Image (cartoon, rainbow, N blue to C red):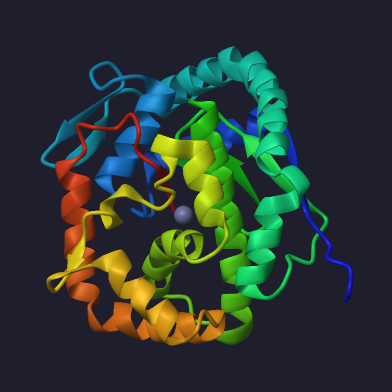
Length: 278
Ligand SMILES: [Zn+2]
């Protein structure tokens, strides 16, 4: 038996300039990639509640200050959070080491995806928002609460494995593929040995995919049950699962997409526990 290799998570506070630049980009939402719900989250995290710096008008956001004033405010928030971010990244590393004892998270994921990540270090950059900008060369986690941050680590690790296998075998980037990758986080958890671990340790935070999917029905059937069935039908072979589940999402995309955005719209008052990224 060949020896398994395991990646290592490296936790640190993300550098201040990068945080400020990324936050300003997300605040402007120039490419309109953030939904209103997610957009409000990042605005609240960096500029405070609506009123002084921003407001809602006709289901969109109006920025009420000049670019300079907004940049100054963001810098202030980032500078003030710097010590906390450093402290939190140290704490988070300890919590992660307990959670991932004997590399149990990587073992589960190596098993499910039938490969490892082929990289030694994965950088977890801690930053002061619940929005997690996704980048294939590393990732950010939320700092709002420790259990939530561990959940984000597992969520992002599943994405890293998912995209590695997806890029090799399916290699399409479209909105259906993105939607599936967000759903599949839960399917991977449920159908691997991660299931007990996550339920045991994270308890109320054990819903690791986006909240909108948990109550969603496709036709009259629960979305995740549909995906579980596909997973069982292909005997848990991950590439076959990707292929079949991708067809399933394509066939039902209008319904899934409408329900996803309706959920986000209806729950926009309830930002605190939301999980957001793109
Ligand atoms: Zn995600």
